[in-house]
Image (spheres, rainbow, N blue to C red):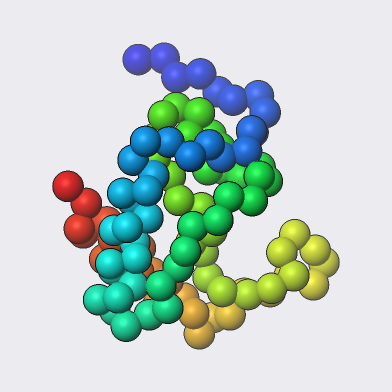
Length: 96
């Protein structure tokens, strides 16, 4: 199977299935006693745009906590790595 390589990254589209995926993530957050994330469409380009271009329901912004995104003073909080990994892993474990 030949896969097309994207030459540009568009903003992420909300697809059928995205809301259900977000609901699973929210349920995982509740199960883990973590803050419950709420979906927000920002319109910026990211790797998530590549997946949605191939009709894959996708959530973006699940990396570690931090600040200063895409600047010379960007940072990530090491202390958030375990919680974020647990959130993603729990969500994956509950996929159909």
